[in-house]
Image 1 (cartoon, rainbow, N blue to C red):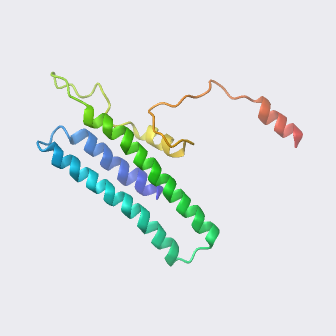
Image 2 (cartoon, helix red, strand yellow):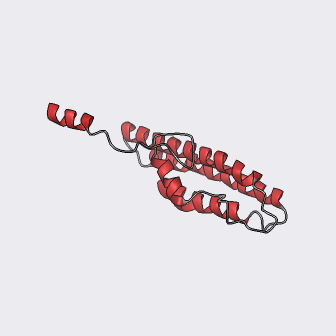
Image 3 (cartoon, rainbow, N blue to C red):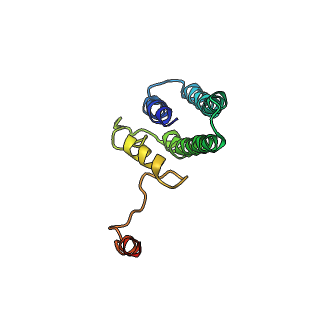
Length: 143
């Protein structure tokens, strides 16, 4: 599931976001991408569920696999929802300089988002400057 998200979904989204200015019929191109995303989400919903049922996995393991599947589906949906709006509203400059604005975030940001405990995609997440070592030290000394 994670493999298809990182190595199939992300490259297709990046290809779409970077090549939609080359295509003359953008509306058709956008519709094809939207349709392929719907097919991807549907396959992502059906295929793991069928595999879990065919392999006769115990109920607890089945629950874990299905929850992870739904989490990744929600994350890919919110990634597309946040970044497709950026791609669709972008207007190239008159001097044809398209490199000053990144339409698709880097793969590092996408992978960080997949593991971050949030459901809303942002390019940058607030982080603390350091680690509060008092709590782990207190817990270790308590044990």
